[in-house]
Image (cartoon, rainbow, N blue to C red; front, side, top):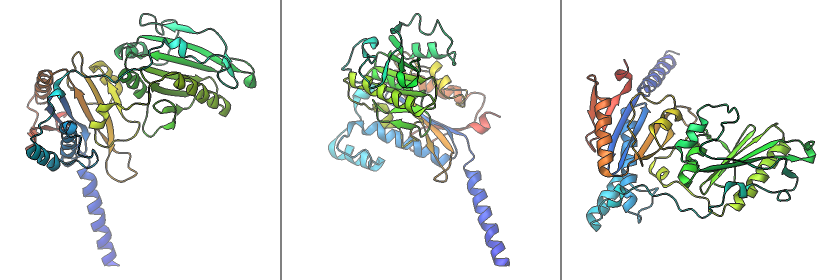
Amino acid sequence: MRIQSVLLCCIAIVLLSSCQQEQGNYTSVYQEHAYIFGVWKAPSVKIAKGAIANVSVNIRSESLPDISQDKKTQEQIDTAERKDGVQPNPDLGSPFETLPIKTTASPETLLPEDGETKDWIRSRQPSMYNPQNIYRDRYVPIEIYPEMYHKYGFQRQAETEYQSRKFGSIPLILLEIFDMGTPENAYGIYSLNSYPLPQYEWVGCKAIISGKNLWFWKGKYFIQMEGYEIAPGIREGMVELAQVVAKKIQDPPQKIPMLEILPQYIDGSDRMFTSNWVLEHVDKSLPNVLPMMGDGSVGVLARTKYGLKNSRNSYIVFVLRYETNADAESAYLAYQDALTSENVTFEKVSQNGAILIDETIAEQ
């Protein structure tokens, strides 16, 4: 009995020690080529350093397409460079290039017409918005929405409502199509509506369904729908309408290349942002001090789990890309100065020179 008590005590001490080791709040950041990248709210020094190293390898390996993305290690990258004389791609410092666009039609022409679905028809003529009047004529739940669309390069919007005889021939579905200018902008505004481990429908670049809403993006378009009531038939109608819109957009489903730089992350936690204003509205839990983004810079972030398999604990990995190496270096030095002001203790991580700060101490 005494032995069992001792064993239980030892296990408790180990578990307590393990939990204590995962209670940090570390920020680590580094600059390489035209990128600034790092972690926020990492629970331990080991996790922070590991994330930085993984992102660095992914950035450098953009010039090494012959090595599998899933199997690259820092040693493989270094070995390949020594053997083949391959250096990190100098084009990493060139301006950010957007994904190709195939469909350029006006949003109103992409709205499903009567007869294109089995049961749903328009209940009114389409309305259109431009950057000057979007959502100015009605209340929207989140006041930042018009400004958020502007930050993501909004060009034009068209919308209409749909009804079905099965549901009394009254408007029950609002369908909106936004021309966001580029696929990245369309994905960016779509990503703000996402959440960890969402429910998907395989429409466009994966449609998210949550409650009475459906969102997806394809090409340069962001599409959102609202069902005015919750019912299986209405949800099925939303999916059917989404399929019609997606078919009209000829662009193939695409992936955002910058997301490939991030380590494995929680599905649905990924975000793309275009300015500090957007970044500050993406996640209210971010540190007070953030890197300054300039014109032409773009960023992505996502959450990564740590601890037990089913744990909800996570930290944030981010990557910012600037127009030039010089812009990134200047922003990194300014961010470093801001992080280390007021005599905050920091560490230079030896293997790559990244800066590491315990935010728990810095915020005291």
